[in-house]
Length: 198
Image (cartoon, rainbow, N blue to C red; front, side, top):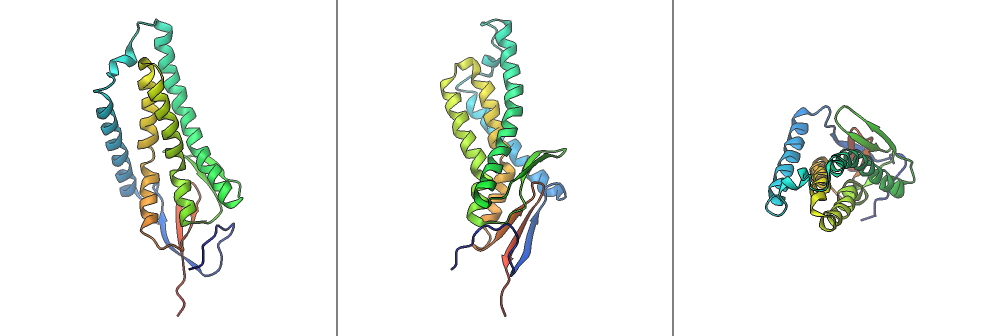
């Protein structure tokens, strides 16, 4: 079978087969959010026996360090969201040569592209941020002082639980034929398949 490349425009012979839009599909959005909540609860429960959450509220290093941790958590969470979408965008640009666009909705931040990606490229685009930042945040959790563990770990929780949508999209892509093309505008994904010749 001929390898499917990435395209700047939809090539002839493809037809739409699937659209995923969490803003329009409330049932799907609820399912993804419940999945994210489940991941959050499991991750918190898994860490509590090893590092008590009380360490986050430890004031033994002084009031300044106490408030610094919460400031770092707030700023770190915002920076993480930006970096997450930036990684999506970098891989979109790498695979297509098309400059991505970024934005925010009432529910989430996004990176989008006008390009059409093959199945393998799109799965990499979807999973790259959770893998890259998962490793970085995991190393930080393991090396920073215990009093800073929950600061970084909460961002790691956001990384993994926030990737529930990316995980769902990856699952859907894996169930589709090899020769699909995916257009991800950032707010919706449209999947195209090769038209069958009669």
